[in-house]
Image (cartoon, rainbow, N blue to C red; front, top):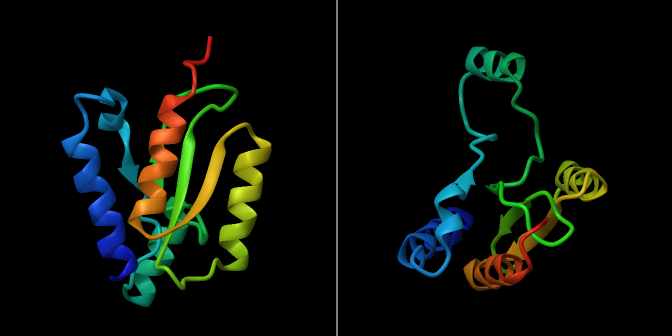
Length: 120
C-alpha cells in the first residue's frame, strides 16, 4: 500500500467508529506537500505551506496533550529531517506527535490517545 492508501484507510476507519469516538469528526489531513508548478509552489509557500508538517491532525485535548499529530509512512517509509523537526517542536509545545508506519499503528495511536482522560 502507498502512504496515501494507508492514510485513506485511517480516515475510512475514523468514519466507521464515530459512534464510539465522536471526536474523530475533527480528524483532518494537512495537505501540505503536493506536486505543482513552480509558480503555484511559490504561491503556496507564501501562503504558509511548510515542508515536514505531519499528515493528520486531531485537535482534541487529552491527558496532558493539546492535540495529536500523526505522520503517516508506509511500512518501510523514513522520516525526513523536516518531519523529525516538526514532531520534536510539536512535542515541545504540548502536543502528542507520532510517526506511524501503516494504517494499523495509526489506528492504535488514535485509539490510545482518545482513551486518555479528557483534559481538565
